[in-house]
Image (cartoon, rainbow, N blue to C red; front, side, top):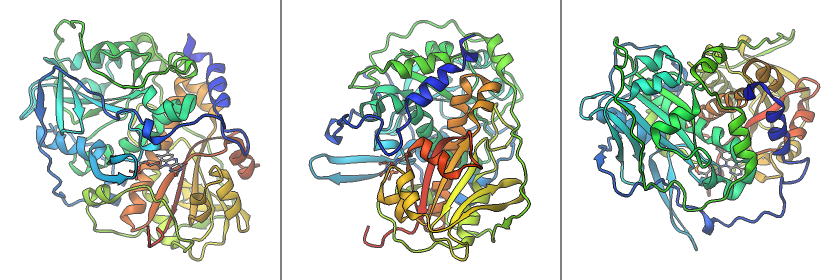
Amino acid sequence: MLNYETEATWHYHNGTKHPNGMLLNRFHVYHPSHRPTPYKIYKNVSQIDLALDKTPIGISALDAISTDKIYNDIIPDIGTLGRIFYFSSGITKKIKFQGLGEVDFRAASCTGALYHIEIYLVCSDLPGLGAGVYHFDPRHMKLDTIRLGDFRKFVSNATAEEPSVNQSPAILIFTDVFSRNSIKYQSREYRHAFWDCGTILANTLAITSAHKISSKVITGFVDSSICQLLGLDISKEAPITILPLGATTQEAPTCPPLPEINSDAVASDYEIEYPEINAMHESSSLLTGTDVVSWRHQITMERKNPAKLIPLGKNIKVKEPLEQTIIKRGSTRKFSLESITFDQLSTILSQTTSGINSDFANHELLSDVYIIANAVGELESGSYHFVKEKNALEQLRKGNFRHASGNLGLDQDLPYDASVTIFFMVDLDKILEHFGNRGYRVAQIDAAIAGGRMYLASYALGLGATGLTFYDDLVTNFFSPHAENKETMFLIAIGKKEKST
Ligand SMILES: Cc1cc2nc3c(=O)[nH]c(=O)nc-3n(C[C@H](O)[C@H](O)[C@H](O)COP(=O)(O)O)c2cc1C
């Protein structure tokens, strides 16, 4: 099966690295005035209003991102779904730029503000909403109606009856519209699909947990079946994650026949294909329910505990409600060189790295977390490896590595000025051996969810943060020998915001 021919992943991953000290394609030009419409537009469908209720429900961001309990028998109503959609992917601010006009910014960070992730809902009859298949329209806070009727069984079949999907009253499906992001990032877009879906999911998991609605990140499903249900052209828009919400005691009923969708929806007003993206997606696809069943085995990462460790500091408690943290979040555009405290870094690390409820790992982060500490209170400047099991740091090298930090983050000022840069690195060979090419999707999204949680934790603590891209192999070299054979999945810089920005 193509999924287990893993040279496809190495071909894509190595072929989309920014070579040492250079951009992948130095001659590619993108200007923000060419930005495609960042919304999928359905023209002739009926729409349903989602009330916009931003009232805090009294859970702080730090609590919401670190609790991942299983709650039973909670059925979300339309009001709660509106809040889940808004705090995941709604418009939280509008900023005017000269020459561009007003730009909508969304609840979660997104590379290039290109907003290429769409969210769909497949549900039973819920309080305030009839059974159907819907698309979230963030511009108007509405749902576009794609199908009426209960089609959950179809999703459940596509996941080979994954139990949480089977009993969920409301299932979210996250898709990626390739060309809306590849216009700027070209073939590297397929990494961004998971980065930008991951930051959204960090918000979704936080808001659902605040509402005591259980959820599970599902990455194993028959891709073509989900495309058929949503009426997607897989060469342009592809499902990448499924998130069942809540639980009932009853399984979804057999579904009505699935007529073809004759949709005039426009997913992107800019179209260009990068064959590397389509090839990587295809080679990581699962073709049948039997493939899904044999694929679905959670992984456990083996890690050695080093002898000498620096215990993390205190966990800081913050009262600010999650909703307020999400609304004020943004990517920091300029860091001051000031220090953050060791307790702030400790809180960020301990609250965001517990892993998630998923079909690929049991609450365990797959990546190893590597750190360059430029200015972190009493912590000696240098490079570190975070040892989650011991809640402690292992020092790799002492020294002032601001220049290296700036250089690894694509020679930008942000990683140079930040107090700390945090790299998520994974033993990709091990992941691919276990999951085949689909392990690439899993490794990327797992790191990005933790990165998204770090965004929220930083803002909850009154700090700033930004995701960054990186020179792949230079990162591995910098953290070697410890990180030998590891590949970087995600990078985030954290620090104090420059006051004037
Ligand atoms: C994974 C990731 C990588 C990013 N890389 C960079 C980067 O290299 N340089 C940069 O200035 N901003 C970077 N950003 C920040 C985005 O440009 C920013 O999220 C986007 O403009 C939306 O703005 P907001 O986060 O303030 O809502 C990145 C964001 C993410 C999520």
